[in-house]
Length: 401
Image 1: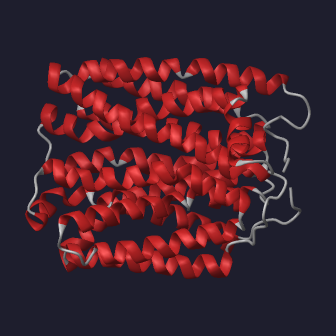
Image 2: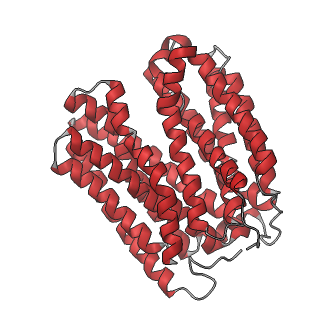
Image 3: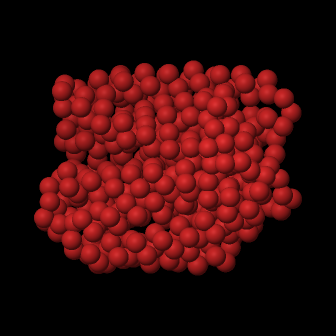
């Protein structure tokens, strides 16, 4: 690992990249009702605007990870920022549905250039990788809060299209901030080999199987609460959409607040595995609380606990991925893990929706999610055991790369 320590400006630039990426991902969701007449479409049509972004993000994830490993990493991040600023600016202006869909797809592909490259840039020089990744993950939670709640409030004053333009302008501002403050990256020539070899050496590693299993089960279960909690509050407790959204936002508030703390905790322990095990325990507890207590207060507590559970898992898994495979291969390794998580998120939305349509039972949804979170303890424990037994240079606390 390089001997430099990332300054506050560099860490702040990475945090801002994560904020803008997650704001762009989710910013259409609060405006589904408003966008229906604008594009002359139905709920499926406006929902597809979110799906288009996620599809672009998924398909571009591994190619962007390869780019981060085989090209100057900083340029990949800055290119992603420039593209997402440009495409989101045009999206704010178009009035035709299919061009808007294409632009959202391109925004997702641009967003894929931001995550693994920024992780590689900052964790590659950070002496306390868990703490650094915690700060980045805090930016992700903050971006979700901005997109879901800050942007609708702003749109009430200026209108929807000016609000979308403001997000594009903010993306351009982050590009300028990143160009000035992100640390320089070098081409990771040590990776070597064909694209198939670079990917194959990672996916065949048992460590990656454990990491990917944790990511898949964690996000599969977590989307049960993040996606369906507002509907649960409105249907079961007759909350308004604003009140339901405010309680559901506790997930992202807790994630943003807890992620730097959990990352620093894993640095202090010198092991990541026990923290991940605790995270799955917290996720299972959140769903068990929803199952056991039928009250709005319990829902708020469950949302906060779930946010802490995500803070104990997502950033720690990314940190561990970077350390296990080394900074030289961090772009591909992190992007592959992200792709697995994106598949889990997509499947979970469909599955839980089918369950609700067929049974109308939120208890069944919470039961399935509890089982998934509990199942995540299995690869987490295996990861912990393998981490403790790893030889020198393969331990999570070892700053290799």
